[in-house]
Image (cartoon, rainbow over all chains, first blue to last red; front, side, top):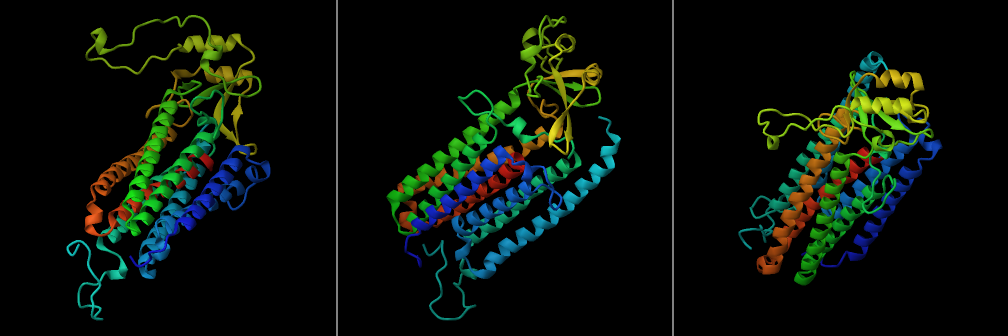
Length: 112
Length: 326
């Protein structure tokens, strides 16, 4: 193999970073500070945005380091990542807009 | 080896044959493309979950009130157990990368040990998920469902949820046997009869003024479920159609039926991936032990199942966020 040097140290570093992110998420999830939880920013609470960003950071760590995407040829990486990211953003955007529409249409019909 | 992996050509003709496109072997490239398609499947599920959640944004169950249990401990500890599960999966991802790394050095012993640890991590995760399902299906508190399809839960004076068993007293008044094949009722089927009858729940609620009823409606300012006034509660309770204990695909004590459906469907599909990942890992593990890859001259198969295994971890990261955190 071309890269015979060991990556053990780096692997453990990524592991500690991912664990730290998870711990931060869990602490925020347990305490849910009111400033972040009960306020609204760009359609949802800042806390939810923090969770989403931390999740994407974890996903990046797993894909780039553990799945070794960083070592692949540029256009192979792009063929995989761009395709998936584009289609997912497209789908999620449309479906969430649709869900919001369903709520605004149907919620007034529910009597609580 | 010649038949399994193409060697770079010695002359510099790009199209002369023997080249690996994008420097990736066939198997690895196809594993990546499979992962892309599988990622799209999972995103479709999660996006559908998102749509449904947006549709019922003012009544969706609050995760912290649903997933509160930790094995061997009493009391409520939201998040702790799923955090543990996430940690197990990340740890098993690490042992997987370490196995791949050891494979690059043709270190058979290390690959064996790390593969074994990865398999153990996977088994712990699937076991935890089974426990999580079991807790979810059995339920904790119980609730009632009204004729207009709403779930009413019971809380004490402080607003803390209490179980039916905590306040329901007296006789159920309509004792009868569950219809089963065992009792000779071959062609009849019915849902499990709840522990308490509807009349019993209503009369116990009327008798105990300290108990309140919580509806599914979320107070968007406080992000908490709404607690009804006593009169409103009695009016709603009189519409009871069903006493609900636990969860299945048709009804659940946590709220929206479709919430449990998505929970079973998405975590189930993910659990199935973990399960097949464990099987693949076990196959590779035995191949490592018998020396298949040593003879082949490279451990690329470990890398390929490794990609799949990390993908399963990757999906869990998103499931964790959208089911338990957001």
